[in-house]
Length: 320
Ligand SMILES: [Zn+2]
Ligand SMILES: [Zn+2]
Image (tube, rainbow, N blue to C red; front, top):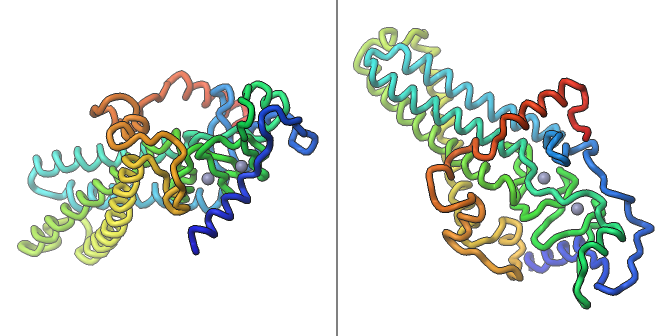
């Protein structure tokens, strides 16, 4: 029953626009390709930044940063710096801080990368003619953003766009997870799970060490403040470890089955050629398996960043 409801909703969103050879009526469509808009930046011409202006998403994304920085503070200033073993502090500090930087970089890349948005209002006569459709071939138009909807694209009501291979909209990264930013989202969940596990391990060690000596010898903070800070860190770490580990597993499972979360929920029969297991991973992460898959800085061009900074200083952050 539930899956038939999903299918019906899907049908409502997929309005067949035309078959090849049919007369194209474009009078009711938005003219030309709309770029930018009040809710989303667009990457046209590689000159503008992709950023979803959704208040809930912006609050959640800021909270994510705040929570990671809180963990950094407790791990560094409450546990590692006052610790007497230099090598223990150095090795754990280097590991934890490197993982935290990688987690925050993955978060930024997920949030600021165009997830695979279909240009708004591209359902124009000229564009359809350029597609050179075969006789009998049917294409679909999204009635909400007036775009030609490619196979496996879905409309996101928060981004107000159709997104290729949309998996879901995640407020924690204030963006959709789709074809072009899924790899960064997977890295984000992985690094958050790793720093959460590491923070839990360090907290356990700290409690274990401190019960053997006086608490005020163990930390620069008062015993009460240290315990409160550590308890909050442990609760945060348990919550995020559970959440991100489950999410990471679900994402890897989806990639290995070449099926998005939406397709799984709608129980869609695949009409596309499925890329299973390693082929699926290669198509999302790009190239043969290597350590580069874990690098959230891949494809980042310094020149483009400088150009973005230049455009923003010019006061036209979301324009093209
Ligand atoms: Zn749409
Ligand atoms: Zn979205």
